[in-house]
Length: 323
Image (cartoon, rainbow, N blue to C red; front, side):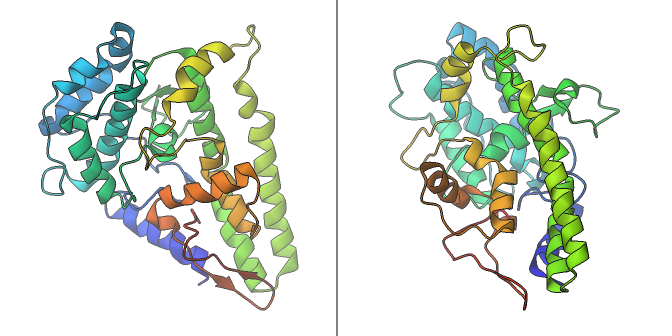
């Protein structure tokens, strides 16, 4: 079994055990959660759910900091919050942290203990190098189906944001178009693994077939999903560039010296393609950014090496890849 197949099998076993805390990876859902993200926490942590539900209102009233300062400091160790709730808890606290900083132009002196302490613990449980809001939090775990009887439908029109912050159409369309791209790109996971197996077996016909499949999968979102982020005011998915620039764009920029800006370079499909083609050079500005972001990815995508008499694919210990 080639390394990529072993990694995929490990991810499937983890999901069968009841959580995806090592990362999102499956042939069914690709690099999105296998099932829709949870919409609530246990009653012990329902205070976070209540604040999340009112987040757009807190932004409008400029009361984010006052409300979050008053939140209780809830414990987040394994004995306090079961593993199945770690992703929701961590995603909410990351959104809270960035909301606390971004709601006003004057930065706060520090995050309140009600955010900082449990957020650090949950990030540790997800094996992150620090307390960080990641692409997985902001995009991959930030959607819910409009029709709960059709959870497999993951196009923009079928979804709502799980945790909106400012609650504008610009935020919803920009984030959920990326969920749609990831959903439509899900078949790439299986195709990539099969392509590597074909290369290992020196099966040129099978390898060509899988590479063509990957190409077709990429072209679909590029010609459809991506274009839904539309600056045309007559479009049903209009994204006002000014509103986007004032609200959505700055939200995910790092809020501490350990932070980072979530950008297109964070998108897992791009990172997976870099690894698939064996990219070695990252000298451009975007390349350096993409390479640096790999340390924030989940451990299911830790570095590994692949070898055969036809190809050699290796990543260094510093290059934490998603694949």
